[in-house]
Image (cartoon, rainbow, N blue to C red; front, side, top):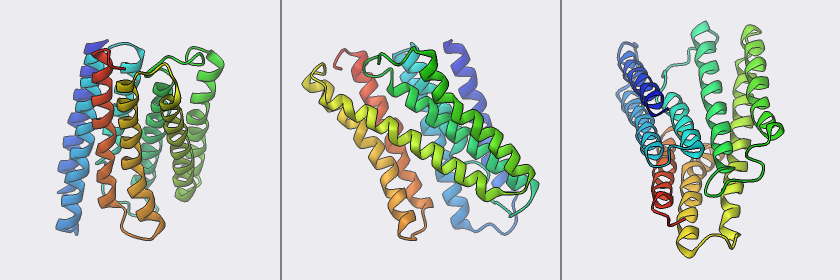
Length: 240
């Protein structure tokens, strides 16, 4: 299993490098946009490094789920730069963003059912089906929307499903702070995970809501894999 995760990570890294190099072949792209794209590509690589680190520490189901989330995030961040409205390339890019983002959010939500304590719901087939049904439906919806040329619908599905799942994952992880089963150190590290999730999403949401350019605030997402990697390493040492 470790070799599979490593090979998948290597494949995503190659794709990240190729996508980053392709940016420089585009005409009329400003130096500021190129710099931002480079930073976002680095962000994607940060997810991959943290995902592999976590899986090397806890190679079980929880580690595999988090590594999968990081692989999807590595694909999502730092992808193709320009969306020239209405073209097939734009449609494919939107589909790529949708699937990688929703699958990543689904894996993160499933991870929340396994870490730091396995939930009684984690192994129920009905619950797993409910988790992945939105991914299947969103993919089918996206295919229909792309065939019909409705990119706005694809973006709407992506935003609603991925953000909803991420918020639910945040709620589940935060709920562990109030469980007596966790020690003082355990609560501290789980609190660090909650802080990482808030730092990852709140700046972007605030910037978007007030009309400020959101791309620079995307960089705060790096707080999520780093804080999770620190907390999961603590679990590997028996502190959670």
